[in-house]
Image (cartoon, rainbow, N blue to C red; front, side, top):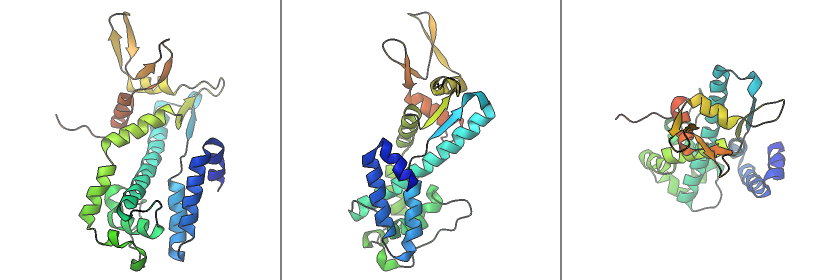
Length: 233
């Protein structure tokens, strides 16, 4: 509830959607309450702000890996919900349906916590018939129609540019995310017309002011920290 209250100050519509889903999740039978509350929490955004003065290269890698792991799990949870909605043709997700599908494909798609054992909801009649009629392979194939490499790159590109992951100078409050990530990736391109090196991963406006990171920055960062693997040439 505290997270929903905080979100309401930033995005009232998103806060109301989260609150509505929470109500749906906790007003089902007893087996769905805990799972429903957990699922609602996992879908909520969690920002990370780091102090540049206390950030070495190892700490940076650990921090950004942890943050991206959380974002990626949240994205998988959202993908699961979207997939289930498309199957059952409803605007909300029943916790029984979530638990059922996670129990079938959760181990393969990274939806289980370390040591967690997949579970199938014993209340089979509470699971939508359209889900029970689908095979494990069909569920996996549909999941990966939603969960694509392009979607993952776009997610992290957006998160890097909207301040979800931010590195700042605690003394001045200056946002240093763009430059630290560009330095971490260690690349630039030579511009013949201006006779100077331009950071490859930085987007600048018409006045030359940095305004964000490119999609390539998100892709290369994901490759460098091991979230993506390049296909063999």
